[in-house]
Length: 130
View 1 (cartoon, one colour):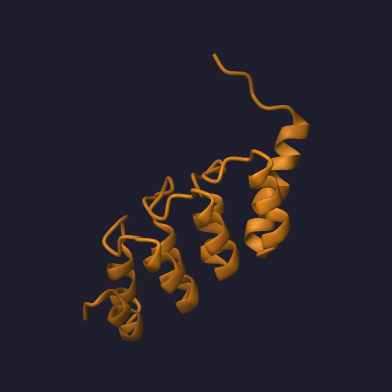
View 2 (view 1 turned 180 degrees about the vertical axis):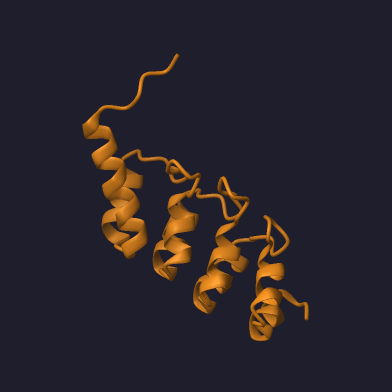
């Protein structure tokens, strides 16, 4: 049986997830460079990359990918960072993820399905579909 993390660990993790949400790239990558896993996930399975992508922080996404974050890591709801970026209409983040090899068909709904659901034809063109 694993012990629950102490309040200090929870507080630090919360701070790091907030850095990803806020796009504070320099501070975020300092933690990752110091040993925080690039694929750290919260209690919903959202990775640092997912949070940075969803909130439109292309520089943070790029930096996390460069440090080993998985472009297609799916959260507990089956969503990929790319689908989150499509939902939010974050074209720059989408381009960064695609350049890193993110799969537009990964997840449920996939980035392609998300773009179709919300009529984002311009984003479908980035995936080479319509």
